[in-house]
Length: 284
Image 1: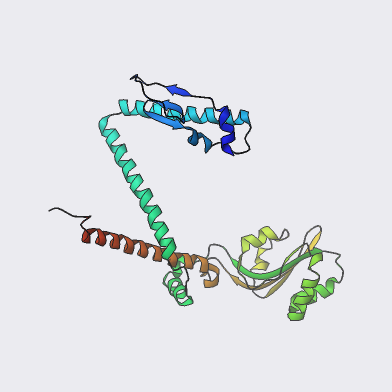
Image 2: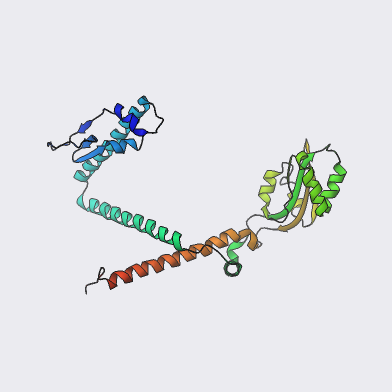
């Protein structure tokens, strides 16, 4: 437990400001800056359970010094900064406190009540209404590929099965996948062309055009490996991204809209209730 280290914290710093005064020292206090005390439980929170005595002492001393320094500088600032500047800061602090508590409370309410399920109809509607926002800035490909040694056993058979890709061919390729250096046989998912260039060492800007042709079979080689690539479909830059590719983004747009509407509803209900119970009144 953290408390087992507290016997080493015999530090009791009493920092006295400009106005000297006598005061009763609270039982668990370990430091003071004028009228503000720091307590043992404040120290406990920053000391790890497995910390050594030396580390605990150092952590405690550093924390106390930082705490004291912050308060002392703050008091000096309050004594020396112009009143109008302090007033501005106080208003900012109050507004920040209001925003912080309000945001946390509303987010908790929203989290408990919001419906995060998005129907296909909703997704299609939002997608169509915002289609111009979903133009691609990178090419998309649907492809499958395998990387294998150039002297792989049954290479011709592998090529044949890879290109045919019927159900029995998929079973065969899965059964020998252990000999592939890398592979992806899921050719129904859109991936960015830039990801393909990163994943396949032999693919580069020089042969990229081969990857941007629909229904194209490509063989690439480097010094060690052979790469078999089957391109099923291609979308180019400035084409519209397909809904299945941007569905997570579309869903988030819908959920965010629901959140804003729900927050507005909650705020209105709170205000109406406050008016009804005379907690909120406007004087003319």
